[in-house]
Image (cartoon, one colour):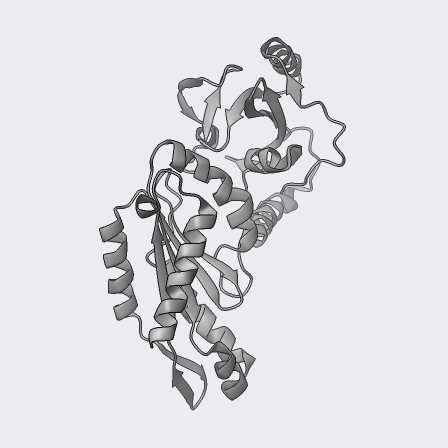
Length: 300
């Protein structure tokens, strides 16, 4: 669970010496104190150099980014964010604070084991753990389709794109828009339209649903009847072939209620960072994919 800091009164500008003193002052009260580069998912020193090739999520025994990364949140809002982590029957309070050392933007992260000082009835521990997981998922997923939502895109995925740009990692995008969606709602009802959206998301999530570093494969509900399919680190031709292959395999028939079924379709436009060039940006990719999608729709 995370929340932004109130106001902008917290100090953010540090010299290296000030940052080192600040981190040292926190060590007495916390189990872990560290600087992280959340975009690259690295633990760093005050000069921004990676320490022992350590990824920030390794502390939790994960091989990929946390679903709700408070450090990314703190970086985005230039403030603070907090969460509770439960691991191996231990409960941890995690704080992330944005700091800037010279021209480098980083996050100071503290972790404290609060298991023995957090008072809970014994029969509530499992329930609270499940509640936290459920709450975290609700923050970043669309309630109707289960796909990642716009908040996840803007707060977690887009900040990490700088890493892809700097490391020359390809980013491939498919923009999906349901054809004649208003007509579906008007003819069969909004429940039928909702079912179409759920069917589309369920199918594509089977094939694009990993958070591996530099190789993410994601389905995001962008808004209304629009979806984004994103693949990082894949070759353009391989991505295009996958999109065509899975599109041809999807059974585009909606069974919305007993005795009622109908066919539906959608249009897909693609864009690739390797085509846009070194100066590519998320905005340019999205604009290109959107434009190509409408061209496909127009030609039907």
